[in-house]
Length: 257
Image 1 (cartoon, rainbow, N blue to C red):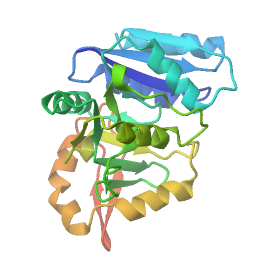
Image 2 (cartoon, rainbow, N blue to C red):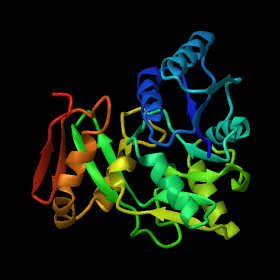
Image 3 (cartoon, rainbow, N blue to C red):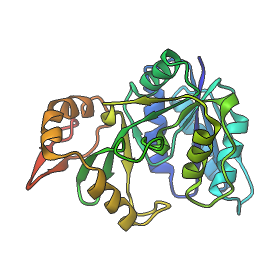
Image 4 (cartoon, helix red, strand yellow):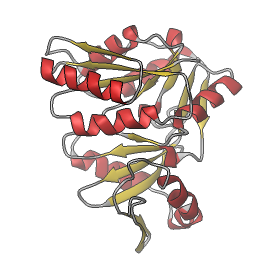
């Protein structure tokens, strides 16, 4: 089943976007396409198309007029998708090669319309810190990572025309619709949410999430071997990181060393 990976991007994001596109090219789920919507200049447009060609990915890249909200841009990306499934694929995140396969398989097995991860890795590159976060403690039914949506395109509600927070509004609409949601557990290693300083939300927002949702020391230590093994699958690898763990840290060297 074809999955359309939907990316909204902008001027200055090309280095991060190249990593996200590379991760899409290495997904074990074979049927996939890239859809990119941006409001940058013609040179940026050509650079995105070149990245897709070099990754051997079928791609639709559309340049639109500036001034539209993030929610409006996301809706345009959905409208351009050809896949029966769509996945949010932001330009500043990293994705393990098995991420799409796991979510698509779980969605199909549970005859669901939407699939989300319940855990994620939260990366702070400037500090060299990485947190494994568990969102399942959030009040049901919003007990999942909102930015990890994989959905049946025909079931997708429209994003609200908001400059930020549009994914939360979308998830509330999904819950209100009564559609079945498949939650993929114990796969936090498959998605890396990155705070780089130019995100929609400020550092305080990201820090609050990491502090509130990081795994307890016992749970983190129980997953240390899994995290080390799965991080080694990323190409290019993440840099050296330390994972806060109680009063200490788990230090993980880059697989590229």
